[in-house]
Image (cartoon, rainbow, N blue to C red; front, side):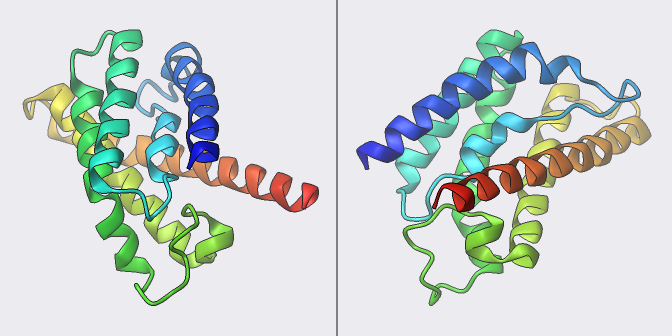
Length: 173
C-alpha cells in the first residue's frame, strides 16, 4: 500500500501541474479540451475502498480547481467519478476475474474492455464538467459538441498514455 501512495503522489505531482499549465491551454478548435488528470482517478486499484477513492478524487479535483480557478467544478466531478469508478469497472469485467490487485489498464483488462471502461469514464466526466460549468443550456449544440469533442480528445490521449506506460513496464520486466 505504501508503494501505491508513493506512485500516486509522484503522478499527482506531475499530472496536476501539467493539466493546469499545458493541457488546459491545448484546446482544439476552441471546443475540445484534454482532461488527462482524470487518469489519476481512473487508474486507482480496484480493491481500494470507496471512501479513500472519493477522498483522493476530491483532493485531486480541489487542487486542480485551485490551479485552474474553477471554483469547485472539478472537485465535484472528480468525487462523483471516483464514486462510480468501481461499478463502471464491473460493468465490463466480471467479478470472478482475478483483477483485484491490479489497476485498470489495457494489459490487465484486455483492449476491448479497457476501451469501453475508459470511454465510459471519460464521457461521464466530460458530461458532468461541461454541464456544471455551463449550468444552463445556453447553446445545447455547443454543449454537446464540447462534450463529444473533449471526450474523444481525452480518450485518445489517455489510451496513448496507458500504452506508453504499459510498454515501459513490459520493457523493464
